[in-house]
Each structure stands twice: as structure tokens, then as C-alpha cells.
Amino acid sequence: MTDAIPMVEPAIVPDTFITGATPLQFMGDNLRLTLFVAQRSIFDGGQEHLVVSRLVGSRADMLQLAAAIVRGCAEATPNDTTTSMVVGFHEAPKGRH
Figure (cartoon, helix red, strand yellow):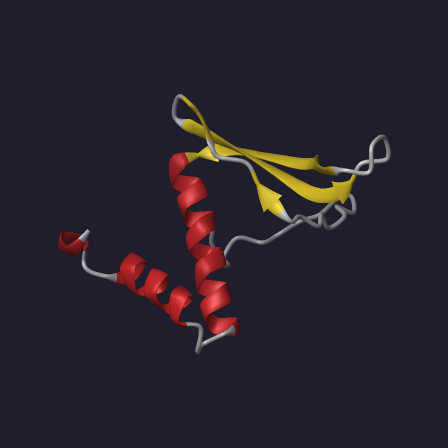
């Protein structure tokens, strides 16, 4: 995941809105992250979670993705102490972890 490699999109890929994620599923060296959107059920009017996407990737790639999200949130909201603590933890020297 680097900016030096060009990004191509031969077909339009639509954005996917999410409101949550299920716990990670570990599959050998890979992880599966299931993403959902909360909605009202058309059957009984109760709350339900509609699966909208599943991401599968290596542990290393998923950690890079998570770190990129945290860094982006920290840049967008620099005074958010929770995000700043997480970024500080990830960027700390390896001996501290």
C-alpha cells in the first residue's frame, strides 16, 4: 500500500457505506473482516445488520489498512485524544510494544 504505485480502476467501483463490522475471522495467514450496515427489518420492524462487504487479506495488509485509517482520522481530527493515543502507540519504538 504505497502512493508510488499507480491506481487503476477499469470499471467503476461504487462506494460502500458501513455502520459496523463483525469480529475478525482468522483463516490461516489471512483475515476476513465482514462489514455491515444497521437497518430496520422489513419483516418485523426490529433492528438487523445487512452484510455489505467482506474484506479478506493477509494479517500484514490488514494491519497496514488499519494503520492508514487511524492515521487519516488523526490528521482529520488532530485534537481527538483517543485517535492521538492510538497513533502514538503504533508509532512508538518497537521495544515499547
